Length: 546
Image (cartoon, rainbow, N blue to C red; front, side, top):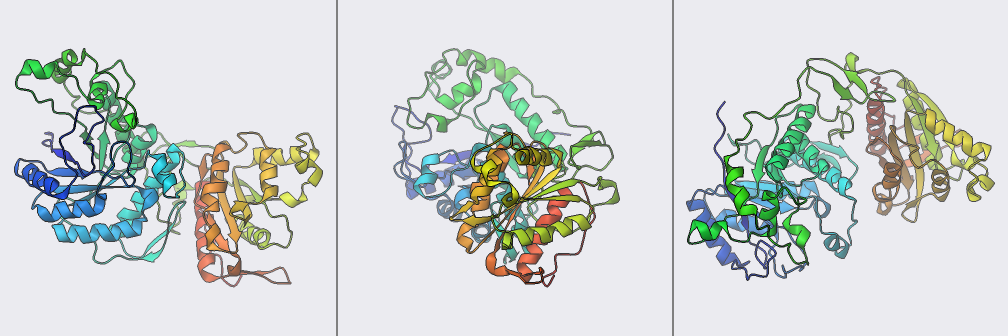
């Protein structure tokens, strides 16, 4: 099969200070008139794409900048064929809002809008805007959920999402973006050199940008992305490479020129890979004087005819019960079925096939409420019945029953603490429910978790649940409880749910009534937890009147 011809793109200089960190004065202009002329010039000379940069806060020499999406739309309206990729940060956008903007821009431009999902590296910008700063892999997990939601909104109706970072309820978008012969929706790009970035690209992205790698490093990246795509049962994304043009009057002058930091590291096998952004606020590293001699040799090296692919029908690790088991078969695994890969953002109640059913799992149901009559405790015990109906063995544990002297005195050898550790060790999955007080999970729950081994949740599937009096506390699940569970080694923390106190009515006879919307959402997250444990039996949705 012949290779597709290369496509060319350029960085839009919509920020001041140029496109590289350098003491040499940069000659680009961040203003619209210059960029409009540049876009028309690029379009007329065969460039197919332009990528606009995203920056919100004046910083590291980029004191002036135009917002990426609005500027991209302006360039689209000034051109006829150029496709413009707008860079966005999921932490500062809701997928539904961006989906609406993207659909409008796509119609106005005749199907030329695209988006680059940047997981973010600039902590100072997020904190200056009052937004939480997640650790590296969590930022990519949020980006993946963002992309799944964006694609579903653009291609389907009545989107439902009970994710870890975003919520959507029966959301439909009209008009949807144009469905052209080249693409069913605006193309979705991403970059990043890390393991998390490569895995995300294979699972959800249309294009993957590589930056700051030498020849062998790029080949390794492509193989990793292809492997992740194969595990997800999808076609691998297309690939883009960052390049620099060194223009001088003669070849001799250009071949002996000192290159900017990005290009130097892309050519040099002797330095750790890096990117332009890593030089923010610092002097760029000295150019590698030997790079010009390696460039011709690298140019002569042939690309592999075909990158290694995982054999279809071979062993595929899947989540199934207490540990990953090997499964063979001819069907390629779908998104979310591979070990350690998050499932699709859309939650459905479709039963798994008979061949996917696993053995009964042991579930530890942990209530972090200090009160026996609390809504949190009653709701959790109500959900226990659903898990039992699905075939799991459920062991309840109320933190309030652990002696106070053991918790407050941090008595690791107390029989109650030892017994709790044993329950965690025996469990395949753990449900953790807590009331939210002042934007944090309960103190008694924290006291118990602190007395468990550091990696007490290693290899386990965990479902976090919370109750509270106001939606202002909903982020306590993602930004307070989830990081703790992750740090304890949880193999998979499935999407949790925050239930308002007003949606839970506890009756004197011990029964419970849950508002219809909350009941359905809880049923979905419990079913997803059950499926992640490898058990496919489905009980009816939690009744609103049960």
